[in-house]
Length: 379
Picture 1: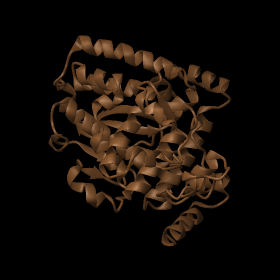
Picture 2: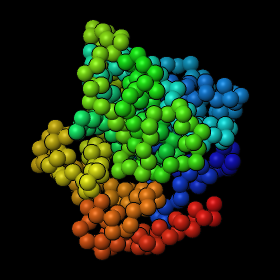
Picture 3: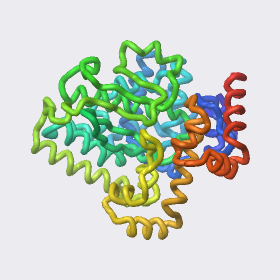
């Protein structure tokens, strides 16, 4: 593939035109993550991919071919790679293995210790609820493109995975491995096999892919075409005690997590990105209002508006960006009628959705969807 031995070309352009999009290309340019070239993802995650590929007869040199990454970093525990490098490595892995379900394999093999101090903190904390809360707080020190939130309702809890911005390449690979990794990590912390994690299930917001059948027997129950991407489980698990619970060791590990968070930029990232992380589609449709978002970020609505204004944006501007992102996802990955998509996005009148979509793309939603279907049919 040209992207693996590229001629002089901008890296962002290479990503946009990669053959590994596994989803139709949007009709309008999609924004790349703002920190795509910043070292933010621990190289320990690459080490697991190297192990998996070695078992499939693919050497480290082959996996790293064409990726601007020094192989010496693999021996440095504190080293980090950029989202751009991690994406290219995942592309190489999928191409060389011939397995589009590599995100499943990666998540199924994820060990709590792969997360460094965060893994040790969760394994040694007093309860599963604390383990989940620790994960949600410190995940941004290891994965800056997603946030997580703990939800509880009607006897079930869920950790919802939210994108801070559209993921333009290999979206399913990253979401699959993160949520399956959470499920496997949770079962391992409790001293059980993933198949014994009774009552747990994973939701994805896209249709069932062809490669799912090959992994079905190794996976927990999976539900597709759902309104969110999350790991769902009975609430009783929150009170269970990890088999390696050790409050003193947990405190030490949390202190190290705090240090890692501070080194990674911690909570000082732009408020706008944090707001985008909170603007997730509700199961019943629509988004949380400005006051609800402010409360989740532990500030008043007035303070949130002031901080966003200082960053040159506003709640309404960010909401429009998120609606645009979710509109593309629903049109690409669901069979909902256009009026149902409009209602889910919070438009009381479908005509308002059509006007907004024309503003974003120059086309109506129906034209955009028809073009996607034509591209899919063309292969």
